[in-house]
Length: 196
Image (tube, rainbow, N blue to C red; front, side, top):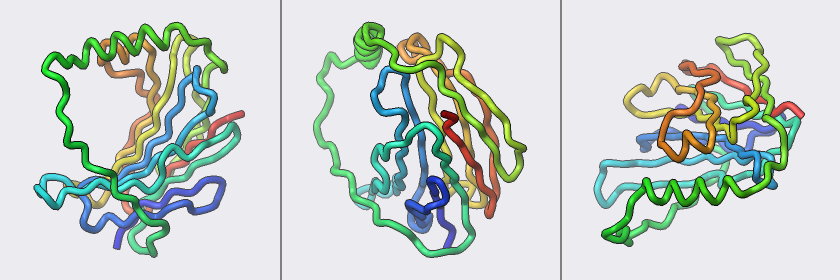
């Protein structure tokens, strides 16, 4: 049974089975005004199944520190590690005057007032397909995301993407700057190190 395996500094935190799920994913993210350096999340979801829909969380904002290394691999076989916790379903409806644009404008105004606690993030990225490369955020970029996603439409691979964004790009719902993107096949891995 294929699994999405996630290690931090050589220790396997979780290995999530893909069987029965539509999407399995891991995300690392951080912003320059957050007291935590970065956070790691991992989840799996079964969607489009009506009442059988599920969203399970394996890692919820696991704290990462400068100098740590995260490895994500799509393993063809193995044993599951960790247990997913079911996320409660939200049955409330947004108010009639709800506007994502207004919400984002308000959020952007709030975070523009916050002091930045660190300089631009720096990374080392490598994978089964890519030699190690060093990269960093630009001076005006606010945060970063690193996503590794498996889905049942292409069960033989995962997509990996490292990107940066500004407060303006979030407010305008624009794509950030892509630093690296690739598709990794079964048995391959990618590594993101948070350079101290």
